[in-house]
Length: 394
Image 1 (cartoon, helix red, strand yellow):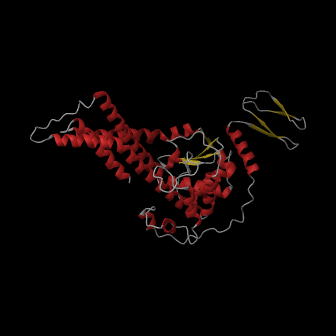
Image 2 (image 1 turned 120 degrees about the vertical axis):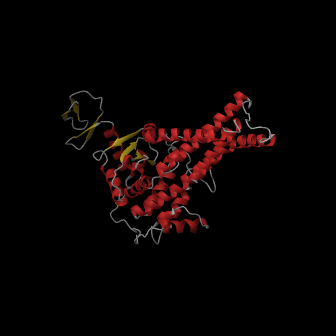
């Protein structure tokens, strides 16, 4: 599908170029199409992650601020057997969601919302982290970056072509070939093809892009189940994220495909909705919960085909051909404590305050005093017992 997008990009460049010069315009058009794609890809490759994190309002956190999240990322790093450790970011937003970014694994990052931290228990959060770590390990971010920029190049070329027709009236079309080697019929065919590709090209490119994105989401789910050996954790997390009533404020059409669940569609993709970047949430959950005999890539592919009722490859041959040892599913988690959403929300609020440079003072009477960074007085009084505490003013 990726090379299909590439072929479409070259075809559009050739036809658009031939429209303006039937002799050498095709080659020039192909050259310009590749140049546009390379420029867009270079910008996204070197600065895309920083732009995405900045647009999302993500702030980097350390182990001191959120040790549990740090430990979960470390666990998945060890499970995946990779030498790099992704940076961890938190987005102050009540909508539960997460994404991974970074075209190079050694410069990758995982971002989660505060809503995700206050909604999921440890094992559900582990499933989400495993899913995002899988995107990094499988190099999905690099693939989708180049595919997205190819879509952008095709859309840009179509827009420029239409503007050229509008302002030039099509009068610039000419043919340098002699009358013996060209005909009016060939010119008409090129004109029709150029118009058709200008209209349908971006649509076809979007379908390619969305199909690639959906397949990589399935692969990330399968990889996450292998890393955690507990597919129910991710399934339960997807269920909670899909049922949220909150809307992710920082999401838009450009950033939406990066998230674990499409933040712009509460119900995800329905039936054969080809215009979604994500598979149906209900289907992803159903596949994960149907993994009863094993959690290898072959098991996931088998369950996927069983649920769909047809053969469709979503796992690459390189993964299906791996000689994988028996990986039993973790049936029960006896160590899991009862999840308290109120306490989780309070803890998440404290984490956000730490990120925003709040100071915390634990009074002997049991009250935790939270001092904002702009508080400039040397003393603070406990509201319960009246005890005075001296602050360290930085």
